[in-house]
Image (cartoon, rainbow, N blue to C red; front, side, top):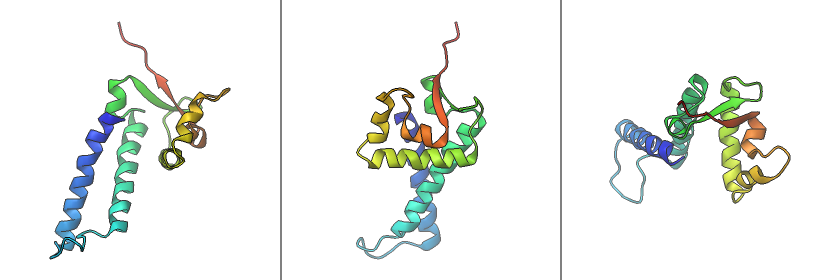
Length: 130
């Protein structure tokens, strides 16, 4: 997760730069150059595209490749765009519930995060090549 954050944050910054170039700077620090709603929508779109492209193409982001983790659907294939969106929104729900959706991983019998269950996906560990 930390590795992917190091890739996504510069994308957020670039998007803010694009919006400032389009909307123009402001004269006051109290008046933001980019409206909060537009900024949040940009972040959501960046997250959807970042994770969606990586998960749909190979099942892994660059950070997941480093840890040999892959996202697959319950049927063993690559997730659809709908599953990507549901997984991201489910992860947000998991985080906003004081982490309850992440702790759910330790509850038998399925041992899956809320966002795994909602999106019908799960993470697998890829064995090391010898």
